[in-house]
Image 1 (cartoon, rainbow, N blue to C red):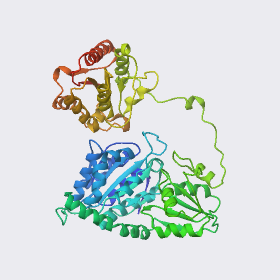
Image 2: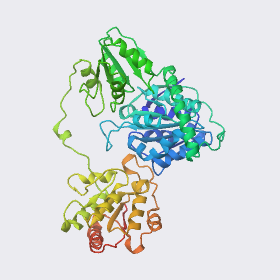
Image 3: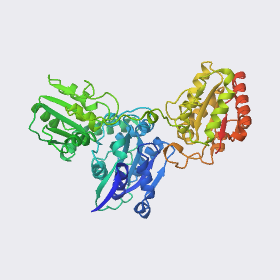
Image 4: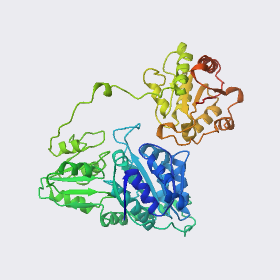
Length: 523
């Protein structure tokens, strides 16, 4: 065995390479980005001709991975939790098509919203889709579970969801790697209609998916990733899911944990193990790094009078990620909270990089809109979202990828004219293109700023899908040439930028039939 010092993300990537993966597809998003970056940099990946490609968005990544699975090869698709919303159409239906080659979907959740709009729990998607899920408690399990996930996917002919959280993704430890296995040979599905979800076929395959649930529960019971660790103190039984088990154990490095623990790493959780713990203990504490999914299930399944503790009763905070201190407090172990955060650090927010062209783009936009008042700029997700903060305070929305253009359309339809949309080049090709097409088709009186820094700037500088193609895309969508202005928003061009933006806003305000346009800022 080879032992490597790996992040959780890197352990997953190495396991996929060792596990015979032929292709990996992703859209960059913290905390999942390093999985793809590791594969792309891997010598073994290059030697084995593993396809490692950034996709335009998570939906296209999911569909590419599904196509590779169709051809009998092992494939992985990676995204952060909100990316699973984008991929949901293909993800949910993939449970009904099933898999041919092993198909593993990695969703990296971000409790506490370190770099996200929400802290949704991807386990809901796995449960909703009726597919097996794996949740590692440490980096070694992340490696082992990834290899097991490919095997389980091919055995059950179904996609497998691997759910991790930020702390596991971005913390590092030694990982024992096993001997690599060869990639699958090209092999089409035995049933060439398996992936054709016409209603008559989908109904049949959905019944087959329902019929697999007992087998999936049996696989969870037999894998070893769910097990009861006995304890003598039956006053409290603990259910520890994924990384929460690590937080629990960190409170007992010098003393022994006396309470029984049901360690959960695979879903669906076998009901026999849950009943065994419940029946033998006076109270139950559920530790989940995310939503109270298991806690809610227990309250429904086992409402027999015993106390169920967790996020819903206030024993644990209802929001945010867990940590050893929070778990220790729930166990009655008091911790020193440590020194207070210095005020200079506490009050220092992030800001746009010095010299970034986005600064002048928003300064010019503020000036162009000054006569109309505030509250007219709909923005999107990317580094330019920092323009919401002082000193710029230039934008008024950031909801989801691509929402800037479509929100501006709706606001303009409501009578808020001028309405301006600001969107980055990578976000534009991720989810903004269809919004701009709506604007063209509806002849919407809006101004669209495509802020082009020629990269996916927020997540590591990956090449943007729009690189070198924005002009072509915008024209192809039907934006008239006379409604397109290409600007270089640098300080030396500030007056020209401000005047051009002001003319665009005035035209949008005065003429209801004025079509959407693209305004590009180059570095």
